[in-house]
Amino acid sequence: MPSSGQELGIRLCRLEELPDRGSRGFDPFGQGHDTLFVVREGGAIHAWMDSCPHLPGTSLAWRKDAYLNFARDRIVCGAHGALFDIASGICLLGPCLGQALERVPAWITDEGWVHIRSRPGAP
Image (cartoon, rainbow, N blue to C red; front, side):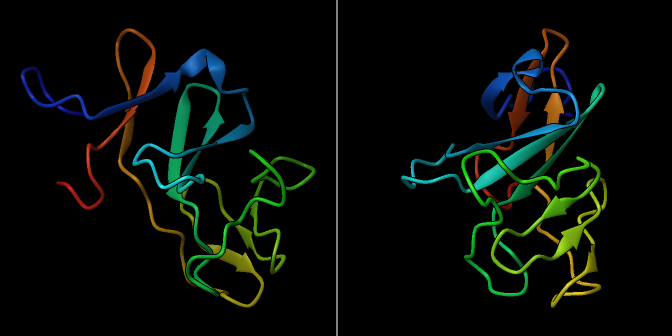
């Protein structure tokens, strides 16, 4: 989380707009499709690029905002069936076993807004 006076990055949504144990895709850089997604676990959020490491560029969602398995305890790739740990992004089962999703630095402001860095790869 940036300290006081640092850039706030890009505001995605309010935390309350993300269902607990749910996911939502975003297109913050205007690519015309969701390029990242956020998973909420209580008061914690985990943001990831929407790209499967098995075949980079392949979206994980099997439909809009559907990034989780039925039990809502793993991220699932709708194209390959790979299962990923929500907190670490590591593939636990599937063709990319041991590889990981690309994390997107994200935080929740004191006002309850979910933010990400203003550009990919920014420190």
